[in-house]
Image (cartoon, rainbow, N blue to C red; front, side):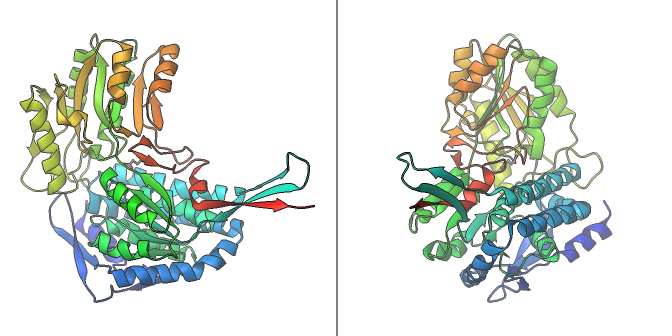
Length: 487
Ligand code: SIN
């Protein structure tokens, strides 16, 4: 990729905090550096938002709330539709920026821009479908009226692994519902969100509806917002421990909460599965986003009669993937986000190997610059291997065997997480039995990818509360008001 294009796109990003429709320096003027995880070089510096900036952002969001709630739904929808179009027009620049700050290969970054923009198109169509109900009181005396209203100013906290799509999945329904918002993007990847804010400004978003505060001091900056009773909702995508802390803070003023937290997705392959499809889809379920996704297949439970063949074929596929900087031609596996994440992946692999696992491919960091880790397949996993219980968030596929359907379901459910599971079988009765028994919010049935703006994304157990996307996504930003009507 040509360096001039990288410079042009980096230069084009506003680097300030975005408050009340304007770009400003952070109060106090501090900045922080954004690193390219493939080279460990500094890409640029961005305003380091402070608690004062957060409060200014909430002031702006609160000031804009009433007018935005009263803006015709059609206008809110058309604003989202315009932004969808602009995002697609600028997809190459957005994708390059995302690859530079996050590391994913350019083709995947482009896929994320398309995926992210689709949330705006979906919610542009939902904005005009906010409805209520009119019914007769069962006693016949009077009527019951219910209406939906925006919950009010929201705090949206977005992760580094999908810097655009996890933003649009929250911003889209908030805008459609008539809510204003303060967005805190992840420290590692604020550039994509800053560029998105600029695009939304150009698409005509009224000042104050969207405010963005990048920062390295996440809890200092969000703390005062939780203390402020004008804030009415928090939506967070990230780890379960952080989600739990945010839920505690949200309790102070009893905020509405949406939490998309950790996963530990089991990938079940039964003896009657189409093995070609199971391997093909396993590559997607494991390697999408370099494995840094809460819906990444975390552990492969494969029937003992096909496990060796499945593992060998998966190792062959993963071993042939090109590792490198995401901007380079043909690269399929970029770097992990930072040194901490790479060490965690290495420790999980070393722990499994120390407990008897066999490395079928990979099993080590790659290169001496950037946070690369080799696509890895492990066989012979023992029950006490830590990676069966913890989210790996990297390109590592542990393959474990089972003998019966009951054993497979028991193993799949043996987790405090319950986000997604993948099931491969050609027996429809088994498929439905297993799908029903799994303790998860989503299932990929003979598919390794569930994410879709038109579908409800979310988990059960410690994977979170609430749903994003689909028909339910907008409900997270609406309150129901019931009116008892006397005729
Ligand atoms: C994630 O949050 O890691 C997954 C996002 C998606 O697939 O939509």
